[in-house]
Image (cartoon, rainbow, N blue to C red; front, side, top):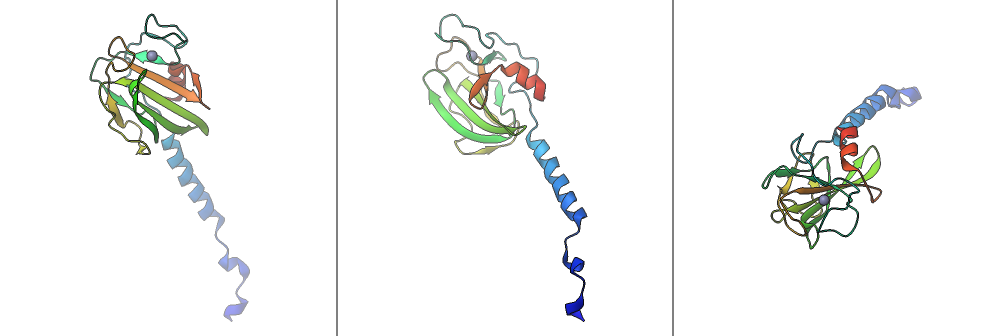
Length: 165
Ligand SMILES: [Zn+2]
């Protein structure tokens, strides 16, 4: 009789749940993948924590890459655009929200040569082109000013990149 079927007949198999978890882990790990914002090996000038001559009065909270004017700038990881627009200091810039290792990570890309290629609220895949290296805002030459903030505190970006690449 149908009403006498054993209860376990209707219980989801544990193996189904486990495979679902494994798939989720795989897709999440891809979301964490990190890449360089400009070609690997690009020289840098002003480093984190230094006080650059001239343009800034405060301690440098990022790193300056000098790949040359017009070089594409890439999102270092999957994320959501928090800000994309103009700032008198940053020039044309983009701020992205990421979730890396369950941490609140934000990356900022500044001094791009024109209005960003992405819009606020847009979800980006790793490597998405944000714009092109320029010298807008408070800048004395074409470079990418790049910041990494964890829980909104700027950290040394090169160490963070190398630790996650
Ligand atoms: Zn800078």
